[in-house]
Image 1 (cartoon, rainbow, N blue to C red):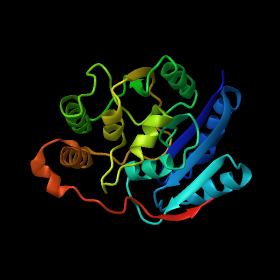
Image 2 (spheres, helix red, strand yellow):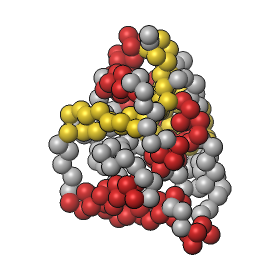
Image 3 (cartoon, one colour):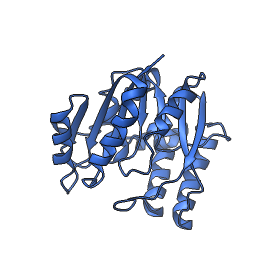
Length: 244
């Protein structure tokens, strides 16, 4: 039985990788899915990313390209894309070609074993020690506060059932963290593993300082401590400029 799949990708300064990403996705999804859609959300890039996205959308009506009016951050850009999903399974992946599109098949096959979320995890990924420390802080938060299964790891390459996405998109806080919302909905989670691919273009925007800020915000917005509740802000999560 073929699946209907929505793919959501936040985009930031990725003009060099977008066409290849689109080609890889269509090559994978054409034979695997009954129906599919690709939702690209440009988080106010300063290069020509949106021009490339627009050109792809004008040629293929299965691709929706959204440009945000102001930079909202990766998580909020993903939230925007999730609100446009129509199909049974939702894939979320990065725009830098490090996530192999072929692995979407493994994510969907695993979720069909009865899971609600499946995370793709890279083998032997080498990180600088400071960034690794930031990620360990965040993982500890998920283990202790969110009560994530300790033998399961989270990443930005993941498959959701649509009912999980429908829960995520109801959030109204200004700060958003997709996995924290998803794991509040369900703990029925699994991993699949794949080989790490080198980044072809650009470099990661995450460093220890940014990861530490995320850790503090996670504690503020997703812990049950009543003392942090007054610091939680509601309001605009993003503003859309253009949709194709």
